[in-house]
Structure formats: structure tokens, C-alpha cells
Amino acid sequence: MKTLTHDPRSGRSLSTTLAVAFFALSVVVLLLSGGLQVFSNFQTQREAISNKQQIIAQDTSRQVSTFIQEQFSVLETATRLTNLATASEQEQESVLSTLLGQNLAFRQLILLDSSKKELTRVSRLSKVGAGHVTIDDHALVRLWNDGRYVGNVYIEPITNEPMVLMAIADQDILGHFQGILVAEVNLKFMWDLVTKIEIGEQGLAYVVDRQGNLLAFNDIARVLRGDNVSQVQVVEEFINNPAMIPDTTVRAYQGVKGDQVVGSYIPLGAPDWAVVTEMPWGEAYRDVIQGALLSVVIILIVSALAGLLGVFVARRLAVPLVNLTETATQIAGGDRTLQAVVAGPEEIVGLATAFNSMTSQLRDLIGNLEHRVAERTAELEQKADDLAKANQYKSEFLASMSHELRTPLNAILTFNELLAIGTFGPVNEEQVDYLQKSLQSGKHLLSLINDVLDVAKYQSGKMKLFVEDNFDVETEIEEIVASAKAMLKDKPVTLTTEIDTDFPSMTCDKRRIRQVLLNLISNAVKFTERGTITLSARREDGEVLFTVADTGPGIAPEEQHLLFEPFIQTESGIRHAGGTGLGLPISKNLVEAHGGHIWVESAPGIGSKFCVSLPLKPDLVLDKEAQT
Image 1: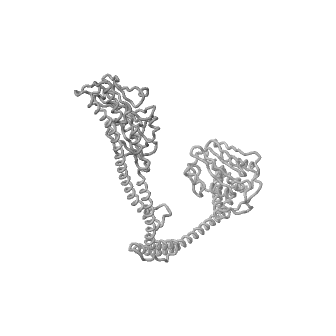
Image 2: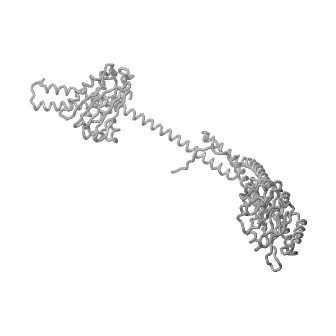
Image 3: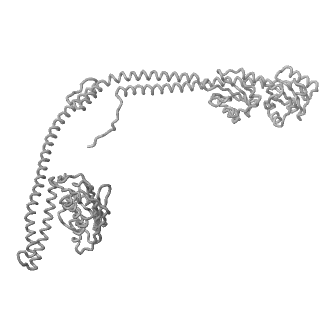
């Protein structure tokens, strides 16, 4: 049966959750409504700014265009009323002087014939300062096509005032081209005009030509300097829009003074100029920004009130749940006698009722479970006691039986030896052979009985160690090797030793350590058919490490954990040597009784190495019983 699990994270209370929900909901709703309102106000303000700037720009452009048209009208009237090209020089000068006197915007009037040769000139300047007026081929083409021409604006170097050349074609009644009437017109009125224009508090207007040159601006120094403002977005649009169809929508960009503005432009048409109006962005949308800030304040206030309302409502709703939670907590702490209060909304009542039913069933289950656990524990304890007694009886029985069997068996072996050597009379060779076989079988049986007795003693806790201080490692190994060589018989196996020099004496039970080493050597002899068996001893940090390495068949990793279990043999052990499987378990018990440990390193096909690590001076007491 699967159950869903969750990470144990501390959650917020219901009151906090509801308060946050009310607050978040109010913020979202107010932000949406406020955002829509601000966007609507922005669009409305943008349209209002666009209309206002268009009106101002159109009025300015109309005044400039009217001024230019008035000058053309004066010149055209003069050419229609009098045939200037064919009149006498006195008449020409009289007409031009009259025009110059009546129109203060004219600074010079020049009459040219059809070959652009000057016929008459009248000027407010001296002859030296009047300068030379030229009409290029481009101007002639415009005159032939349109009858009018307006040149580029330039700054008069003496008066530092803006000037422009305006020319009309002098034609007879049949439309034949007879000459050109040129007027040098002062445009200073445009400076006064843009200076007087009011666009908000800090807005401004200026006039540019098709090349982006500044013609009129409230900073006269920039006009005199000949600033080009083609990098301004709306000026660039005017330059790149030869069709003169402007986009009247205001847009935000970096203005002529380098600040962020909103503006638009209106082309004049003739001349090919444009009037640009700009207003600082902050001033243009001041009302929208103030409205947005007011909306933010209102949103915060309303959200705070909504949060407080959420806390109030949440507390009213959460009281039954809080009580139920406290009851559940106390029950979880061990007080299973409590009952939840059945009160509140319908859903809470249902939850409390179900909770009480659940706790009642839980009490019954826990009571039954505790009773069953107690009964089962008592049964297990009784079985454990019975098993311990049975194991003790088994060990005592084995020890007793081994002892009882060993006494008569030793007598039988003694009688066999006496018979074999002829103590009780002569025996023939066949009888000697049978006696030797009987003696060999008896010794093997005695060895098995001794092993069973050792295991029984260890398991029953009755094994005693007789510790001595003079265990000479080199001498004992020599005796062990001598005994082991007798086991080899005619096997092609070499037995070698590797012992550290100046080996100190060990403190141990001599007989038991000799038994361990003989057992390891005996196993190596049984399993090694050819090759080498090496017994080594060396010192390592206050311990002695004995190793018995052979070139036998080796032991599979999955069988190595069975080696030190009593009465259990591996398949290779049964196949090669037989036996009871008590040699290594007894060796393990004896080594551990000395405070050491034993292990094996082996793999199939590369032989085996049994290692025994023992302390040089173990913390043992003479006749101390080994602990299981």
C-alpha cells in the first residue's frame, strides 16, 4: 500500500494565509484597475498634448507662411502694375524705392534682366555694404517652373540678422520672361515669433530648413552659430519625408536641448521649412504621473485595509480549526482521552465528528496492539530463554561427551601402540598393518573429538587461556615447520619462512597459538598440490602479523564468509580435504580470545593467504576465561 509523503515544512497559520490572500487579491484588482486608468489617462494626455502642440505649430507655420506670401504678393503686384524690365532706369529706381520704403522687411531690391544682369538696385545699406546678389541656375529653373524662388537662410555678418533671398519672374502680358525681381528679406520677425510662443512652462518651438539647419530658436547664439539639428528625431523625419505628409502624433525623444521631450513638427510647404514644437516629458505627463502616484497610495491604503479585514475574517473562521488542531496536537503528544469540540460551521462540525470517531478507533487499536505486543514479547522472551538453555545444555553435553569419549579412546590408542611394538608378544606383518591403520583412525577420531571439545568450551564460556611471557616466535615457528614438513610426504611443495630479525618475546597461550599456526599450515598442505607454502612473521606497531600463503586453488569470494562458521565447509574444502569444518572457527575463537583478529585474502586460481594479527602484550590475565 502506497502513501503520499510530503516534505516536513512549517507552514503559515490559516489567519496569516487568509490575510495574505485578501491583501494579494486586493492588490491585484487595484493594480489592474489602476493600471488601466493610468494607461487611459496617458493616452488621453498624449492626445491632448498632440492637439495643443499641433495648434501652436500650425499657428506658427501659418504666420511664417503668411509673411512669406505677403512679400511675394508685394513683389508680384509691383511687376504687374509696371513693366519694370522695359521701364527707364529712373522709373525702375522709383518703383523699387517706393516698395523699400513701404515694406520694412525688405533690405534690398534688385532688378535683373533675363540674362541675370543687374539693372537697378535700391538698398538700406551703403553701396559698399550692399554686397553682390547672385541667382544660380537652380533658382532660374525654379523661377521658370513656379515663378517664385526662396533661397537658403543666412546670417548677415554686419547686423547678425537672418536673411533670405526671395525672387519672382518678371513676365509681360503674354507670359514672356523679361527679368527677375529679387528681394533680400529680413527674417528677424521669426525670432521674435518663436520667442513669444508659450508651450506649457518649459516648452519651446523652433524653425528648421530641409537640411536641418536651425533658422529660428529662443537661443539666438545657436542660430548665429549655424547649428544643425538633423539628429533630432522629428527633424530627421522631416528631412526624410519629401512628400511633406507629417505624422502629427507626438512622440518621446531627445530634444534639441538634449533632454527627454515629447514633440511633433508641421512643414510649411513654401518655403521648404518646418516648425517643431517640444515639451519636457516630465511636464507633459505631470498630471498622469501624479495620478499614478495617487493610485499607488490608494492601492496601498486599500490593500492594508483589506489585509486587516482578512485577519479579522480569518480569525473568526479559524477559531474552530485552531481548537481542533490543538486537540490533535495534544492527542499526538499522548493524551488520547481528549475529544474535539463539535461546534462551528457545518464543514468544521463534520470534520470534528470524523476526528472524534477516528481517535476512538485509534484508542481501541492502540489498546489491542499494546496487549498483543506484550503477549508476543513474553512469548519471545520465553523462547529466547529456552533457546539459551538448550544451547547451554548442548554445549555442556558436547563437552561432557567429548571428555568421556576421549578417555577410553586414549586407552585404545595406547593398547594399539603396545600391541604394534610387540609388548605382549610377537605379531606378524599383516597384524602390524592392521594395528597401524587402527591407530591412525583412532588418532583422527581423537583430533575430531578435541575440536568438538574446544568449540563446546568456547561456546559455553569455559575456555581458559594459560598466558606466558616467553613465547619465542622464531623457535616456535621452527618447531611448527618441522611438524608441517612431515605432513608434506612426497608432495612437490616447498615450505619456507620469512621472519623479522630480533623478534621480541610475545605474551600469549603458547599451546593455543601453536595450535592456530599448525591448523593454518595443515590446511595449506591439504590444499596445495605443488608450489610453495610460506609462513611469515613481522612486527607492525606493537602487533605481530603471521601469514600463511599457499599456491593452492584459492577460494571464491562468495564462499569466504563461510570459512569461519563451525560445522560448515565450502565446496572446494569438501572436494579436497573433507573434515568437520571446525579448524578455522576454533582458530578464530582463539585469536579473538587473545585480542587479535584473523582474515583471508584469496581468489580462485591464485592461492590463498590467511593472516593473523596479535598484540605483543595483550591485556590478559593468567587463567582468564575467554569471552564469547
